[in-house]
Image 1 (tube, each protein chain N blue to C red):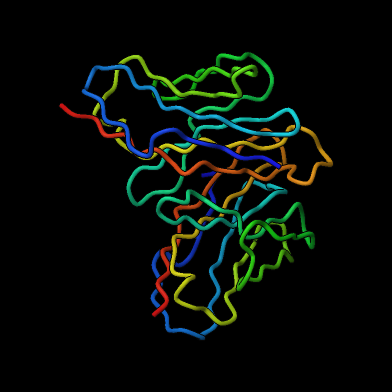
Image 2 (tube, chains in turn yellow, red):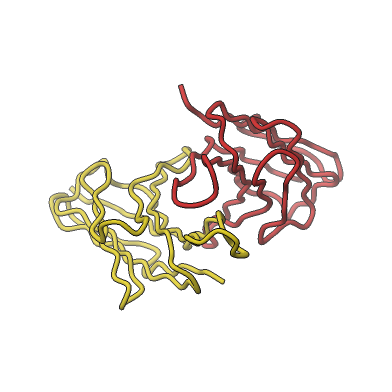
Length: 118
Length: 113
């Protein structure tokens, strides 16, 4: 079984401040991990993904995330927030081994709404 | 342009009236899936398909049906919609199951009255 917990349903930062969105996962097999962003009235867009290569993953729009196996975490960061970063962010996990009961299935966290103040 | 196309974008219907939400992808993806999004619950998987004629239940399949007769299409069918199926629905596809990540459609906002 796999699951994702996103700590904090709402995060508010000032423009130019560090963005940190927290994600912890649970998986019985090695995971693939993803961050998606959803802007109002739109679908989900892939920000970045971890697929067992480098533990520090760089994505679009200046975001990056670090896979920490010992902490079962995959937190999303951006050094300097921009107004255009305001959106809802979802962390997701899937199994990395074919044949598992959840292979291919993306399990999402509950989402974190990021607000950026001027 | 590579994309997943859902129709309609918005739908208001009455309880019990059968409806179909269409989903089509033009990327030759094997894996397709339907999710519903509800506030505070994130996205939950309804059904998925590993390939043509191969479908299976996700976490919340009750009240829904799917079919995968062609690789590009994966329609979601609500035989007898009820108000608790009011939600935002997303279709998604991936090259295969695994680490490719999904491409999502723009969503279908369904209201059942």
